[in-house]
Figure 1 (cartoon, one colour):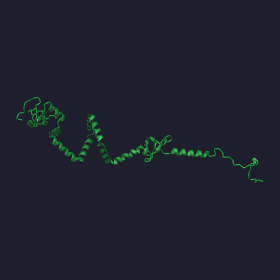
Figure 2 (cartoon, helix red, strand yellow; figure 1 turned 90 degrees about the vertical axis):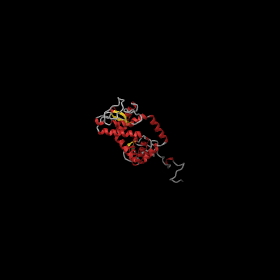
Figure 3 (cartoon, one colour; figure 1 turned 60 degrees about the vertical axis):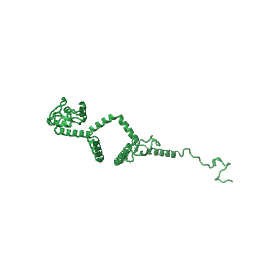
Figure 4 (tube, one colour; figure 1 turned 180 degrees about the vertical axis):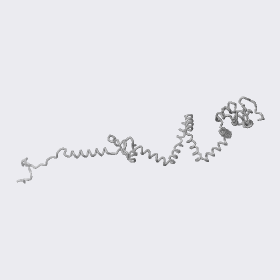
Length: 272
């Protein structure tokens, strides 16, 4: 006789003990919860690179430095991905200001590379006229900056500038003499409040038109000086129309007399 707690194949099916099968979909709520949590984590993930993270759900980021939330277009990729462009540029500019000397040395070394020197020389030859016009225009519009720059360069390279000037003066004595005479004439004209003005190029052109000779004595070997037909002390102007080329000796003999040699071939008399 079998025990009432056990079942056999001969026992009544209605009295057989069985374990009910698991219900279909019993773990479904748990799976859905895990999927929702995963999606939430994905949406809240900060974008650090456009290559590995999709921007489908992420449109804004918070800058690590300034703390502002901005669009993704305001951020760089790669190592600067957590900082906005404004902060990165501001920090780069600050670093550059704090290391001006270091950057100047780097720029100088970079500019002296052979291929850059050759490229710069080639460009200057091809655009010589444009560069000259631009420099003249810029210097005319920024006179104070040009003066300050020249003064700073002179103070920084004083010995070199003086040595170079002395060397040039020894090699160009006539130009030095002409420049001194021109500066003296300008100061004298300014002191006497004379009208008009002329340039070295205009005087050179005037001398060439008369064959580079003294109009008083006809000498072609001496250095020509700009003589005022009507002296400045007698109200003459400092314009090129009141200038005639004379050698130094004839110019001093003429003194303050009003004599126009441009339309006369007479030699200066000894009385003057």
